[in-house]
Amino acid sequence: MKSDFFALFDALAAGVTGETPITALTAGARWSMAETADSLGLGMATPGSTIPPMYPEGLTGLPLRDAAKAAASWNLEEASFGLAAANAFYNTPAHLEALGTYLPFEKYYTEGIDLRGRTVGIIGHMHGPPGLRDMAKAVYVLERAPQEGDYPDSACDWILPQCDLVLITGSSLINKTLPHLLQLCENAITVLTGPSVPMCPALLDCGIDRLAGLVVTDRAGMAEHVRADRRGNPYGYGKSFLLKKD
Image (cartoon, rainbow, N blue to C red; front, side, top):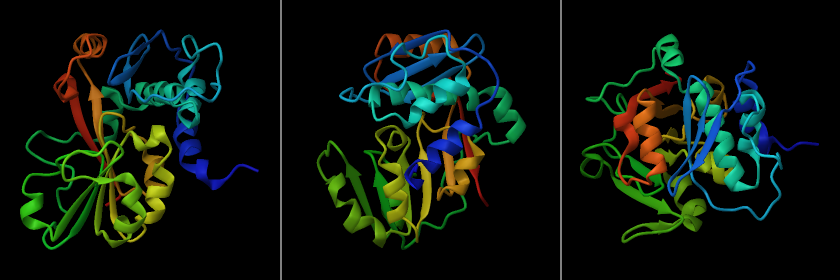
């Protein structure tokens, strides 16, 4: 019997409909990219191909509704493309307009959350909202490849149950740490953030309070950014969004 571990991935894939095929896949050093005739989706490039892929012939040519199922793959390279395929469906200008989730540049995905005196966990080496460290009681950064001042991600089981607010990188969908992280954050406000995050309302029923990500509007610019392995923030090639329960 399938474990509830995959409920989140099932919800993600179930919302992808239609027969739109993937026309091209690109693997860069930082991003995996899935393209259709009309859209482009991103997933954080994630190494790990020790497990056979769900689709041995690859995802190119498959309908997005099939390719999106690969986000659940334990072959993490395939999973990064599976999530990119899901994002090619969800993260489009048309869906952004229909859901009314555009997040203006001058706002932030924690808008409306009182940060004063909060204990905050950040999964992934992110800065968080401006002024966070001045307002919060404590800020813990947890990272798989820790930098100066970061905790290793093995500290999540100790730190996250203490947190009031947890910001989680979207790449946790790909590496499959997200289900456990959400279990540790049952008493916290959770925000899934980054260009890998799908604008999928069903995920808000899976223990996530806010989804904050990117809709690509400059396809040519983003494609060149990925293919050239350019460093830097990719948000200049699109519009940010915020989808939330409240």
